[in-house]
Length: 290
Image 1 (cartoon, rainbow, N blue to C red):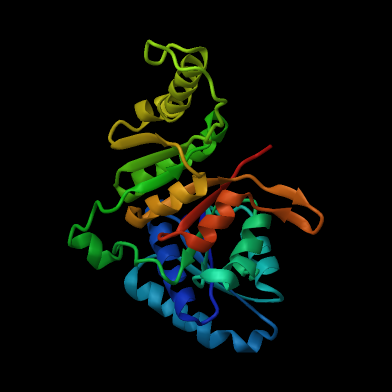
Image 2: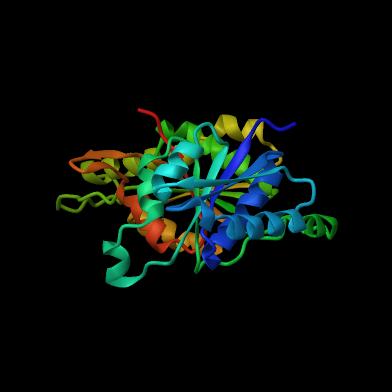
């Protein structure tokens, strides 16, 4: 009997069905159970939606343990409460483009700012994940787009470990992107010998140190997961912009959640906020302690 659960929030919408499918896939990968939660003002509204969700999962994954719950109250509060101790929580969100997307507050944003465990956010404009149903496994559909890790530094060691585990669960490669901050350099007199002025030497040393972050930061994890193909690189541009572009070819992007205190509660950092609005693949947020 499993002692782990993947929790997913449903509401009968199409994007909730896509989140349900990915939550079931994740439960299968983890050998965990699936807990389907529907937050409603009146519990009498829930049975048709929950029954349909459970039937869909059982049809795609026979034998997967499924529990359904109708919870009165708001979706965010219900999922935070029901997800306590869960292996993963999954929620769907509609694609939010343009001005509306930047201004609108969504369940996924508020949930990401409060939940204690890992959170997978599935957007309705992202491509479908690969088939991990029983039929799909029998047909041997393994491999596919890589897991993408947005690495900020050695402080994200737990996030990096989670990304390696996710790549192992999916049987795919891991791409690590470390976005180094753009540095302002003061003008100086040119040197007759290339790259020998004090400013140039200092910039070269800084470049080498920053480019080593994704290599040295995951060296032990490479040894622990030798079967995973790893591509690590550093780019000199906006971290959010670089990650959004890289999500075009990724199965999922994994980033650490560095929550910031604010007057109205805890808010997400700019990279997580941007990815939740602009990512071309599902976003897996891993809370960072401290």
